Image (cartoon, rainbow, N blue to C red; front, side):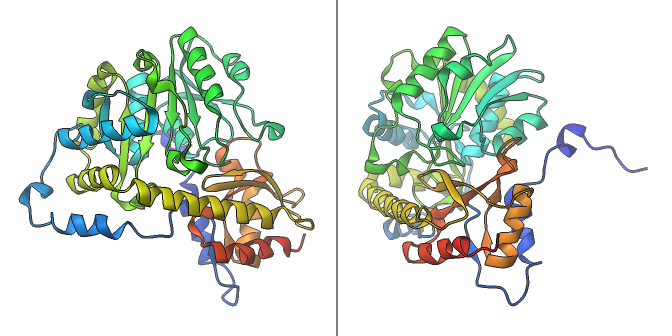
Length: 390
């Protein structure tokens, strides 16, 4: 008799990106050259000065050793300088824990906040990793409905109406993955007030914060001396510095929260690799102009994509877009998002993600990650959507 697996994990769907990329091997051999709109990965390399700097460190034996669980003090000190520039924040290194990507930061936050049977409110459509984690831990994800007319932006009143005695956090991703929507600072501030009224956390995932056009400040929450009482932030530098394989994540919270999160950190990952920490330190101290250039480039890509996609005659309609993503409604009546995405793979050589992996009732949508294709490729990608046989 074989072993029994946990029903909590067997009930969770397979990683969507892996599932969709598995379709590629099955597509017709004479199909068009593949255009990947599936995974949000910058198409450009890290800054040469960053990789040159890391090369000078490789001979140091310390680079191969553990660091403190929360990260090297000098790296966290450099990050405090970044937070001062980015948010006007006066953080202490004790407010920061470096993690194996934003995904591990989310795990740390959730296991510190919640136990099985608790609830976390999310804005639909939800980044698929988040409900997957909650399901594996026996935590209930409660989704605030997607309102297409609002472009997927959260309604603080609607979210407050979902709070129960079991709610432990409001989870918000801004800019949104998958819609690209950028939640205005005033709505984020209102959500923090909702969290305070109910003694719960606002869990704010800002993985794409450096891709807000113009480099605008995402919010003013860190300027409140009492921010740590109800705010927990998840951050990532993987997209910012084109270091997705380095897994450069971060958790920002009160000293007390970080103290308890380190119990999970020690058992889960021990520490972020030192080479990743040194990459992040170099980045926040030297690459603001490089990041700004990439931000402007990504904004041009977004504008070009939106202009091309919304011209008349496209059977697909744009629901929301921004930062790295577009959230579109497909035209295939009676088809799930998976079926629609599979048609695009087979007939157009386009890979993207089906809407239902981002929440129930979203089968009519697809997520496109246009951040990983060059501007000159965008017209060809959109042409393939426009010429799909519906």
